[in-house]
Length: 386
Image (cartoon, rainbow, N blue to C red; front, side, top):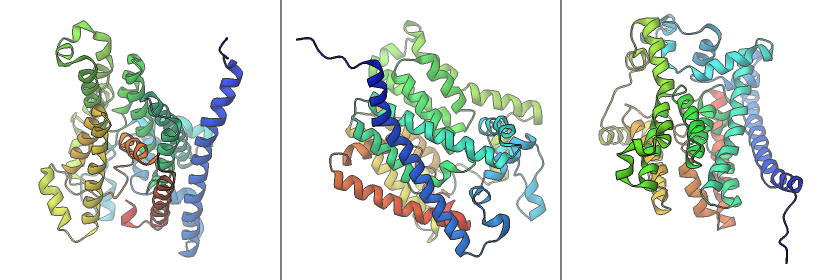
């Protein structure tokens, strides 16, 4: 008996129906609900004029810094001084790739840099959902786990940030792309994605942790210690720091300080290295929102242990390195924004609950309700939405 082979056109239609349509639907539905909630909050708060419109509402926290770079480039000017803030805050505290892309899209939006930033973030988030789904399938997991992971990212608390003019969306996209292509042994593409990743945020360099552990897992430590035997596999590791190095070079040329980013983070924003155990204990005993931040971060770390259960050692190494890096920063000031981009953890969580449809539904509903509350807090500029 001859096996039936699905015609190419039918295969494409099948992929569109079973993958593309659900992902786009989740993206659109989640964005619509969050924006409607935020808009209603603005109306009920009595906001008027420009303060009551959605686009300015999406521009919170670091948004103005990114848009300022997109419009005017980098500067050593310290705008916070005019408002009584601490000296040292400059645009060099932010990496360049996201504002560069926003600058490219600005003419397409009639010169409106804010709407260009919103467009870039939403396009990157939608593309990131596809890459995360592809990554799930590359791990050998089924369609249900892939769609559930994408759903969790859409409804994760504070996922409104993926539609805001901030760098979370493009960081998630490039991280998923770099890890996906590395697993598929498409090393040049993975290296380019990793280089772009380190031009978005310095912690993108932790991709090297993932790549190194995966190579050891696949080929053994002895083979990794002899890179000349398989040089193509090390291309992404070599290329990954390129984005960071280019920014350091620009900082040196512009200011004479190659580490201008670290300088402004330390002096302007007060970032300082603190041993993670000291940092967490201090936060847990703070009696403020930092205690809740610390508790949530510990919960995320516990969820990451699922990666070990499923043999995802490279993903675990990347995620735990990211968590430790954040714990080492004095004062974890975000409830959810730091954690939602660690998509391998949410793949493991989705894998755990996907076999229980009722449990998966309840989990997404709970996350969605918290996300709705955070969207309202975001609209009001509340500190819990930071």
